[in-house]
Length: 466
Image 1: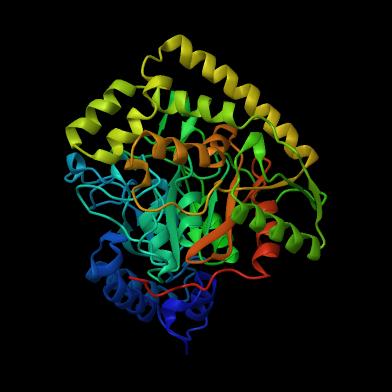
Image 2 (image 1 turned 180 degrees about the horizontal axis):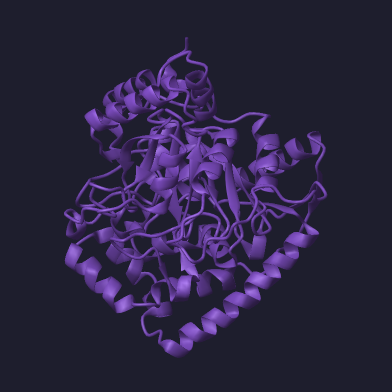
């Protein structure tokens, strides 16, 4: 049989259910792969092999008794270090939090365990999860397995690096301004930011939401196949009374026309030729699969959504954020906050109130747009994946990064789900596209994503190119 670590999460779950190999064997394969490649990647920063094997052995014993252990029974996965896992530090890449040991699990971890998953380890993030680059003073730098000169993305850079290199079969990430979608894009895998309210969120060790829940680090899956994104979403989206914003929405909605709007340069985005070519190619893939694609000149406001998103996120307690970043001494976190000083440095209650009102207007415009175009095909980023630490190369470089990331920053404000699908390589750099749908219509994204995926993706998993 092919090395277990190479298989999809769906295949591993099926093989274990059919007793073709055991959960312990799958865990051993995942740990061996971690040992083989993680020293070069630093994607997983906290793991306990004995506990991993004990969990896998318990799954095997339960299956032997005829118990239903869930759709992910025995599947090795990873979770990000910014959510609570009982007995582990919720560091969020910060030395100040290295001893913040969680007493309980977050809803996401509990839902993974209910689904039968085996958590192999915890993945790296930039300090405070602020950047699209993954490095911090506590855990160090994470490397992109496809090209060490490129960022693995952020803030879920460890998650995407791990899944691209075959450490685990499904990865958890969080996304407030692209932190799932950009690492997936940069590492050449797939990543879903679900609708606001789809996945329950609660961290006893620190808040996951601010401004009355309006801005949230939504948890979602990163995987090597769209089928695994679907499987991961189903596992993660279970109910949890700790989150009053969770919505019991079905995973499948009513039939909609198979209509896609293609916008290469939303709101004047300076989309690079390689990214534009990937979008045109993805549109052809959809047409070949029976989707109707209509080319659009524009979409509802995106740059305005970016500004409003940042005001609500960083304007709420900005001075405290700056103070914490300075105390931590993390250059990336300091630069990320300094880059927004003119926008949010003096934001007060009236500004936050206006931003909330503007948010409702923008969210309504985007939701109405999705009634005309059930799926939108647009850039994930205006550029191919950035070189490592580009955001630290001065004000002009920071501005370039920020401008390219408008599709990452603005969409979360709307509460709509968005999916990055990796489609190929431009030299050593992965390239992909982003799909957007109406709220709680992740099923439409997955259907369109599978049609695009069927015509080819970059090879995965890969051995680190370092």
